[in-house]
Image 1 (cartoon, rainbow, N blue to C red):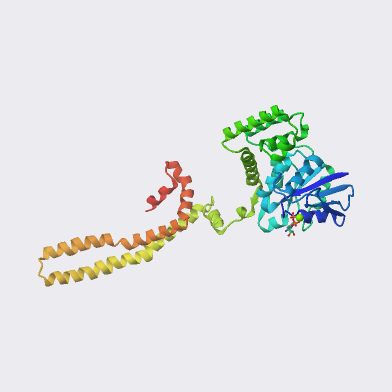
Image 2 (image 1 turned 30 degrees about the vertical axis):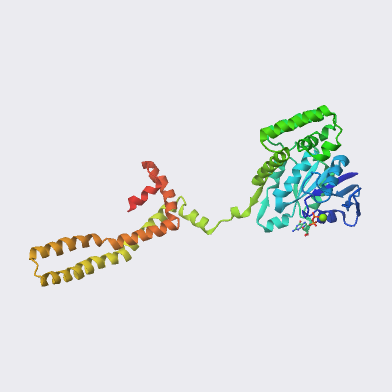
Length: 397
Ligand code: GDP
Ligand code: MG
C-alpha cells in the first residue's frame, strides 16, 4: 500500500488531477472534528495506491482549519509521498507552500500543472533547472488535458524521491535553527527535527502548546529567539518568511523562461544586418554616399546653387547696385559693399542649404539609431588609432 498526499494551493488544479487519477474510486467524508471535506481515492490502475486529497492551502501555519488538518495529516500520518500540485502560471506564490512541504522532510514530487496554459502565455519553465535547484523531482503535467499523468503515476510508485536536502536559508538563520534542533533532539523524532525547529523558531502556537518540552529547553529556545530578533531586527516569523521568499526568487529567476525574450523583432533583424561583420562597411559607405548625394549633390546642392547663382548672383547684388546708384554712392564704396560685403557673405551663406540638409540627414540617422550602430561598427577600425567609434562623425563632417 502506498499512501500519496495531494497538496497545493486553492485552484492549482488538485481536484481536476484527483478526479483524473482516481475516476470513480472516491471516498468522501470529513476530517475529524472539523467541517473540512476529506476526499480519498484509489488509483484507477493501481488499486494499492491510495490518494489523499488535502484541502487547498497556502502555508502550513495553524491559522485555518484547512492548514491544521493538512499539517496534522502530513506530520502524524506520514504519507509515503507528497505530490505537490503547483500552478505553473503562478510559480512564485505556489512555491511558498512547496518549501514548507519540503521542510517536513517527507518524500515529495512537484507536479507543475497547467503546462498547456503556460505554452499559450508564451512562458516556459525550465523544469530540469527547477528540479536541480529544489533537489526534488519535478514533472510538468496538465491535469485538464491529462498530459504526463502516466509518468507522474510511475514516479509515485517508483519512490525514487526518498532523500533530499532541506532548502538552505541564510547562514545566520541556519545556525539558529541548528541550535534549536539541538534542544529538540530526543523530544521529537530525528526526521521531524527540521520541521519542529522552524516551527519553534516561528513561535508557532500549535507547536509551543503541544510539544512536551521541559522548561529549561523552552527558555533556551526563547533566548535563541530573542537573540535572533535582535540580530535580524525583525520578528522570527518574518525572518523565516523572508528567507523562503529569497529562496523562491532565485528559483523563479533561474527557471522561468519567457519565450518573448527569444523572438527577433524587426529592430533585431535590422541590427543583425547593419552590424554584420561583412556587410556593415559596405552598408555604411552606401548610407554615407546617400547622405552626400542628398545634401551636397541634389537637394542641398540645388539650394546652394540657388543661393549662389540667384540670390547672391543676381537678386541681392542687382538690387543693391540699383539702390546705391540711385543714392549716387562713390564707385569704390559700391565695389566694397557689393563685391566685398555682399559677395563675401554670400560665398559663406551659399553653404547653408547643403549643411542644413546634411545635419537633417545625420539627425534622422541619429534618431533611428543607426549612428549608435555605426559607432559600434567603426569602433573596430578607430580602436587602432586609440579613438572611439564616435569619432567618425567629426571626421565625416
Ligand atoms: P483546486 O482548487 O486545486 O481543486 O482546482 P480545480 O481542480 O478545481 O481547478 C481549478 C481550475 O483550473 C478549473 O477551472 C480547472 O478546469 C482548471 N485546470 C485544472 N488543471 C488545469 C490544466 O492542466 N490546464 C488548464 N488549462 N486548466 C486547468
Ligand atoms: Mg478542489
